[in-house]
Image 1 (cartoon, helix red, strand yellow):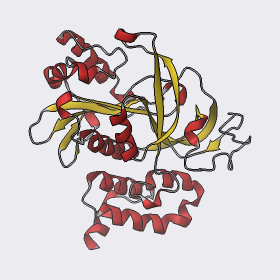
Image 2: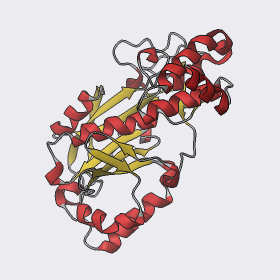
Image 3: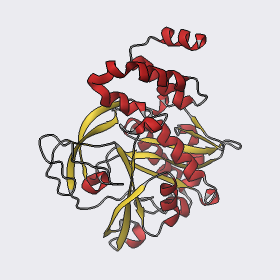
Image 4: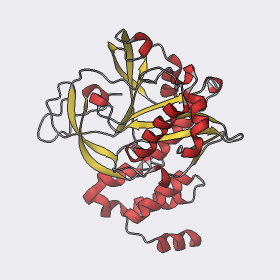
Length: 314
């Protein structure tokens, strides 16, 4: 998946939610387990395994330069850059749980995708791990952890096309302007938080992965390539976005993260319903959902001892 961004966009100012920054550093991130994968932050001990990945042309094919690491020193520099900026991205190593082998990396590698404005996801896998469903499994799990991060309300300038998908009526609640996402003339248009991805038009496999996870296409553009073997040649990139749980996320077990923030002054009115939802969530077996439930209960003013007592008695 390409890290490129468009050279020119039409933007709109939106009022939305984003993870509170700085993000938790690697040392404070919990490993994520799926049916087949262990997804955890990379560490210095992974250097040689990472060098094996980054010396494979297929693994590096969608990077900005498209070039492999020719020495372990180059891999060390890349690992150092990741470790030193771990609170500015949300990237993990992807390991096969049964063997412990490192087969890829991925996550949210940019908190603002150039002029698109939204956090950008991406991933890379070694050739031997292609066509096994690992990318869908990994990215779905990482996005679950991403939506579970603590949030804050923000204003952000984003590409107008990214906030007009599936007929969502952006602009109808704009404050201080008409909120027109097509012209960028409105201000403080309220919208659901999103993540985005940019994919070369020839990379149909990655496009299928994104579509399986609910991403929607929202345009494409041409720009000069940056990869060493074709610098300056035109490349077509397809833009995808995925809306987060937002205010309509009551259907989702992770939706309360943004729901509670949007309620603001209405929280007292909604407290009984939110408390019941959190209690139901806390009894599930999924770690991410349980952490969300506990955070919500704390948001509602519950002390840890209070909800533990209630859980034991329920």
